[in-house]
Length: 273
Image 1 (tube, rainbow, N blue to C red):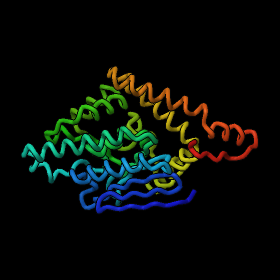
Image 2: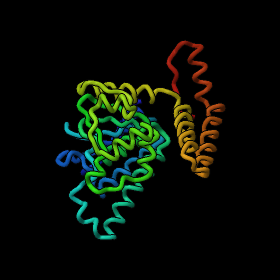
Image 3: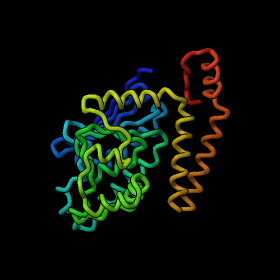
Image 4: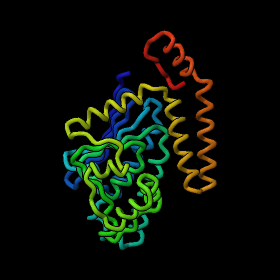
C-alpha cells in the first residue's frame, strides 16, 4: 500500500500515502494564520479526506518552523465590521469545524511552535494531539475582543475541565508544551527533531489496524462525548451511529482476517470490508 495522491492550493496542501492523509496549512509568512479563504479551502480538504476510502487516518500540520496555526488572520478583522463580511467569516469557521467533527477516521494534530486561537480550535477538534517541546498554546480571544465559539469552548472544557478552561479563556495566557501536557491539552510532548517520526509512527500504527474497528472506536468515543454534552438529539444520533458501526465489525471480512492472521502468527491484511 504505497500509492501517493498529492493536491495543492496556495495555502492548503494535501497528500495521501500508505492510507495516511496529511493536510498541511501553509501560510508561513503569517505563522500559518487562517484567512477566511483558507478556512473554506481547509474544510474542502477535510471533506475530500473523509470521502477518500483509501484514507484511514488524517494528520493536520502547519508548514514552516514557527507555527502549527497562530490563529485567525487578524489582518482581516477590521473588515469584519461589515455585516456581510462578518457573516462570511462566521460561516467559514462554522463549516470548517463542523467538517472537522464529521470526519469518521482518527485525526492527529501535529503541533509545533505557536498554536493559538483558531489553531487551538483545530487541535481540540482532533482526536490526538502531539506537540514538540517548543510549542506554545493559548486562546487569546479576551485580548482581542473576540467571543470564543461555544462549540470550541465546550471541547476545551471537556478536555481540561471547567476551572482550567476558565483560566485559559479569562487570562489568554500562553502555555508551554509541558504545562499543556500536564493539563491534558496535548497527549504527548517530544523533542522537535522527533515529532515527525513519532507522529508518522502513530499514524502508521492506526492505518495498519482494521479500518472498520477504528471507525467504530471513534464513533463510540464521539457518542459518549455527545451524550455527556446533554444534547439529547445529537447524543441519540451519535449513539445509533456507534451501535451500527460496532455491529458492522461483527460481520466484516476483517474480523475473519484478524482471527486467521492471529492463528497463523502473521500480520493481518485488513481491507476495510
